[in-house]
Length: 120
Image (tube, rainbow, N blue to C red; front, side):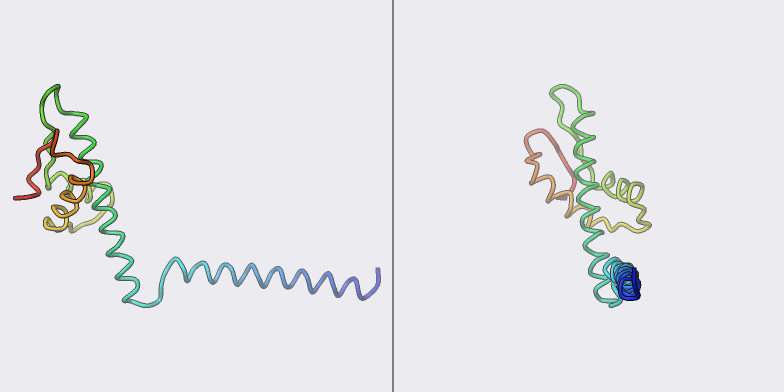
């Protein structure tokens, strides 16, 4: 193997290391945006998504625990509590939880077998 092969191997090796380094740097940027407004937007979307997940979970638990022929009782406070406990939010606004519960209540057509205080 001559000098040409050694140089070609070194070039390929250094190119691979450079690409891996660039990938690590770019991946970090995608996960944590530098713009504060973008970070806020992402946090708001995650908050809304977690509220909806909590509402889905509360509806599911209420339906499973309701007795035969009884309506499932789904409360806004249960959604607030689930969001705090499961997703670790210190502050969960009741109007946000109520809006998420109303959306999921209508999505899952819960009016047939559930009652809620989200509309009050």
